[in-house]
Structures are given as structure tokens and as C-alpha cells.
Length: 334
Image (cartoon, rainbow, N blue to C red; front, side, top):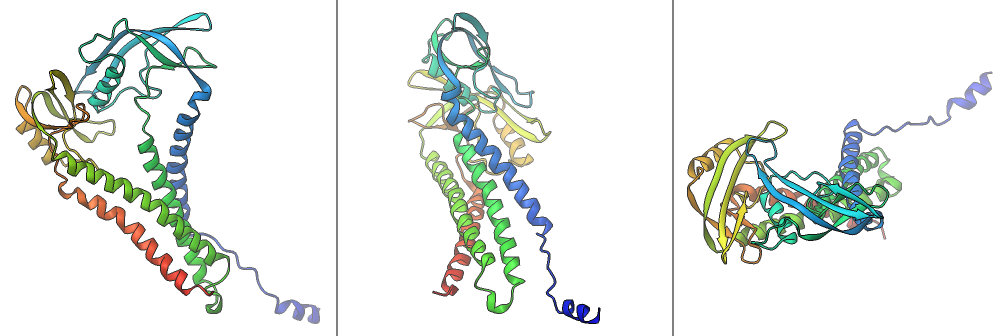
């Protein structure tokens, strides 16, 4: 027994490795946002396989504006169509929820069906019908936002890659000094840093594009607009939200918009919204910047202001991950 005990006395003990709790939280959070966005994107891509374009006729299309509601704008719409010999009636503008806080999105959708000045009622159109459930249909892809899904997917997957990089770095610190630049943890760290650099660069590109668009908005022509109403309401989460609707004309055609600030990377503070309502009460006139290439796109406040901080924040992660990757590649043995 003594010899046997001595035999096992020097045997290596198995070391169990457990990821840090913060890493698990980051991975789960990133996968939730990233995968849900990818699923939405995949649903939009595969829609032609599951839905079929079918002729329909519009019975009604009006835009309801209710500033007291959590989401103030919604389409009042109805249309009918015939699919496989059976007639159906539906009321859906987009494939998802039809309510929105962007009046211009509804205006554009209506203009696709009926040009300015032409009543939509009675017009022939095309709707998308679910092959397996023909009663399920919609008129246009109002709520399809591949750019929003892309940003959400990039952000979610970036969180996952950062979590993996942190955990791989933690694993390399547990290794012996002679093994610090070799082995699987090191390779995982390199790969996750490269993924973080790629994903965060995509987010930075979106941020730069938004800042450039905001800068261009300041050069749009000024047009006089009439404020229909303005107030500070509350969204579904109970947070204050600026509600404004104004109308203006471009080349003899009337347009409406609810956009006040060009960039909305960060929520407006209460004092900003209150001052906007005081400055532009219902019935007053004000100058607005209108995009000559898209008259539905207008803004009251084109200034970027302190939102340049968003651009700065979006550049920190790619700069940090790129620097770390560069140093690790330099230290990597040939």
C-alpha cells in the first residue's frame, strides 16, 4: 500500500478551468442580440421562398397621428386579394408591426402605392401572401430595416468576440512563461482579436456614415414648415419622447415629417425636448432643412452637437483591438 500510495503521490492533478461569470454574461447577451438580428435578416432573405406576390386592390389608406400614444403614427389600411380562387381581406402594411414614430416612413410607403395627389382608394397594387397561410399578407416592407439588423448583429457578435478575447487572455496568463506565446489559448486570442477588429470596424463605418449624412443635412435647402402639433410624450418604457409633426411643400407637393434632430445616437434630454416644444408650438411656422433628393427626409436641427462622442466611442474598440493584435503578431515567433 505504501508503494502504491507513493506511486500516485507524484501524479499530476487535473486542473479544472471555469470561465469568469462576466464572460458568460457577455456571451449570452451578445448571442441574444446577434442571433436574433441574424434570424430577422434571414427571414427577409428567405421571404421570396415563403411568400408570393399577388395582385390586390386597396380599399383604404390613411395615416393616423395620435401624439398621446406611445407610438404616435399608424396606418389605417385595408385591401383585398384573391389567392388560389379564394378572396381575402387584410389590414397589414408591413410584415411586422405597422406603428412607428417616423411619419416619413409611412408617407414614403403610401407614395409607392399612390403618387402625390392621387387617392390610394381603389388603386391596384401588389401584396405579399404567405403560401402556407394565405390569410397572412402585407403590402410593403415598411419595417424591414436591414441596416438596423446589421448594426445589431455586428454589436452582438462583437460582444461575443470581446468576451472570448478576454477569456483567452485570462487563459494565457495561467500558462507558464515559456508557453505564453504558444498553444491554443494564444491562437484563440489572436482569432478573437481579429474578429473584434473586423466587427467593430463595421460599426465604426456605420457611425462615420451617419456623421457624414448629418453633416450634409446642414447644407440642405431651407423650407418653411407649419407645425401641426408638438409635445413631450412617453414611449412604451415610460421614457420622455419628443413628439412633433410639421408639414411643408416641395415643388408644389405637400410632405409631412416628425423628424426633429438629424442624429439620434443618444436620447434627447428633458430640457432639450421642452425647449423644442416651447420654440415650436402647434400652429407656428419654422424653417426646416429638406433633402432635395428625397423630399420626405427633413430635419429641424441638423447640428451634430455633442453626439460626435458616439463616433469617438465607436473608434475605441477597433483601435484597441487592432493595437493588441499588432503587438501580438509582432511577438509571435516565425
